[in-house]
Image (cartoon, rainbow, N blue to C red; front, side, top):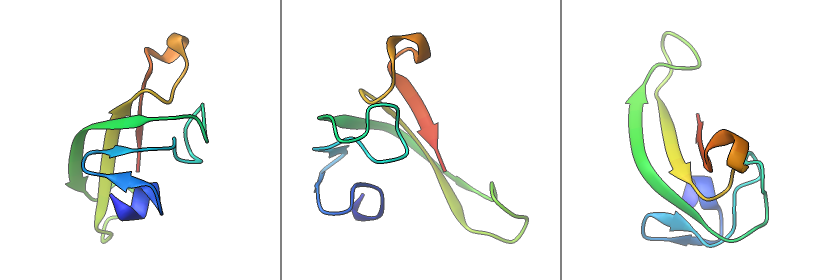
Length: 66
């Protein structure tokens, strides 16, 4: 979580929405699932993080970010 939330990680949430989200800087983003795989390149080790609370209602208040 420290990689995603930088200095505001708390268990499975960020106390401030990450910059990559629709409501960056707003409180709070709750992580739902983390899926590991090769999303950015065939030989990369990546994690797709799905959370709620930092996206607009049009996006169902959810979003996933590699």
